[in-house]
Image (tube, rainbow, N blue to C red; front, top):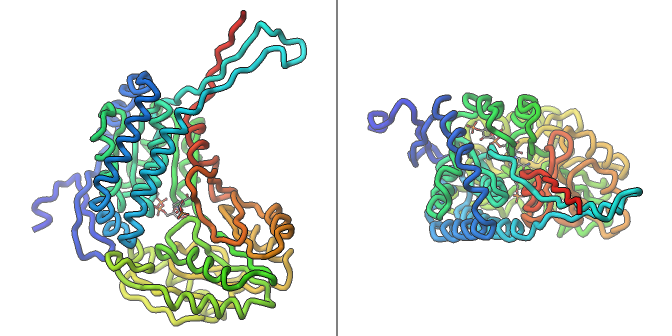
Length: 465
Ligand code: NAP
Ligand code: G3H
C-alpha cells in the first residue's frame, strides 16, 4: 500500500524502531538543488536590506512558532531519531531560547571604530569604521542527533547577519528539520531566503559544497564527512563540528560519587549518541575499583526502552550503528576487557555496556562508538593520563574530576581539546559559550557570537576627514 503512493523521487522515513512509517521526504536531483541555491542567492540582498531589528523580530516570531508547535515537533523528533520524548521537547525549548539569544546578540554587534593615529605615524584625521557584512549564501548541513537544535544553531546566526541559507538536514532527521523550517516560514521572512534541500548527502553533497554560489559552509557530523567537505570546499570558509572521544579523567582525590553521576549522565544520555558524550574514563588506579562500583550502581538505574516511554537508552539510529557498537564491545572482550554489566541487544536497542580494564590495544580505547558503551582505563600516574588523552585523533572536550583546582588547571592546559570541564560532564551548552573542536573534532568555533562572526566578514569604511 505504501509503495503505490510513493513517487520515485521520494524516500519513506520510518521511526527508529522500524515499526512506523512517519513520513516521506523528497529526494532532490541536481537540477532541484541548483534551483534552490539560485533562489537563495537571488533572495539574499533583499533579506540583508531588511532592518536588523526587523530580522530580529522575525527570529523571535520563529521561536514563538516553534514553541506553539512544540508537541508535534517533539513527537516527530522522538520517533525519527529515537530521542526520549521529554528530551525531544527540551530540544525544541532549547532551540527557541537559542534563536532568541541570536536575535539579541545580532542586534548588539555594532562593529568597531579605529583611530588612525593609534599607529605610529598615522593621522587623527583617518578613521576606520569596521562593519560586519554577510557572506552571502550559507550552506548549513546538520546531523541526525539534534535535528532541530543543530540546524537552527546554524540557520539563525546566518539569518540575523543578513545571509540566505541552503539547509541540508540529515536524511534521518529531515522530517524534524522540515517542521522547524515550516515554523520559520510561518513568519514574515521572505520565503525564498531559506531553502531546504533533501536527499542523500553522498549523492547531492558534492554539488552543494563545491557550488560557486555557496559562500560558506557550516557542518556538524562525522569527522570523515567533515574532512572530505573541507578538502572539496577549497577557498570557501568552513566551520566544522565533528566527532569526539571525550575523556573523563578521575584523579585520586576526586569526589567519586559526583564523578560517577556525571560520567554516567555524560556517557549514556540519548544512548551515547552525542558528540560530547563521555567516551572513555581514565581513572587513577588507586580509586578505579571504587569508581567502577559507583558507575555500575548508576548505570543499573538507567531506563532502557522506547523513546515514547522516555527511556534514556533507546534504539540506535540504525542497524549499522548498532552493529558497529557491538563490534567494538566484542573486540574489547576478546582482548581481555572485563564486562561490568552483561549487556544485551534486541534489534537496534543495546543495553548500556561498561567495560573495565580496557587497554590501549583495544579499538574501544580510540574509536567513537556513538552508542551506549563506556570503556574504563586504569593509570598509575597523571602524565600517562594526559599522554593517552592526547593520543586520540579527536580533541573535542575533556572532564577532570579532582578537588585540586590548581592541578586541574595544569592538566587542562596540557590537553589538546576545545574545552575542559572541571568536576562536570562534557557538554556543549549553554549555547552562547564558544564550542570548539581541536584535531579531527573540528575547525573554527561555534556558539552564538562565534557563529555569527563566522558568517560575516569585516567590511572597512575609511573616513579621511
Ligand atoms: P554524518 O553521517 O557525517 O552526516 C552528517 C550530515 O552530513 C548529514 O546531513 C548527511 O546527510 C550529510 N552528508 C553525508 N555525506 C555527505 C557528503 N558527502 N557531502 C555533504 N554532506 C554529506 O554524521 P551523522 O551520522 O549524522 O552524525 C554522527 C556523527 O556526527 C558523530 O561522529 C558525531 O560525533 C558527530 N557530531 C558532532 C557534533 C559536534 O558538534 N561536534 C554534533 C553532532 C554530531 P545524509 O543523512 O543524507 O547522509
Ligand atoms: O552531538 C553533539 C552536540 O553538539 C552535543 O550537544 O552536549 O548539548 O548534548 P550537547
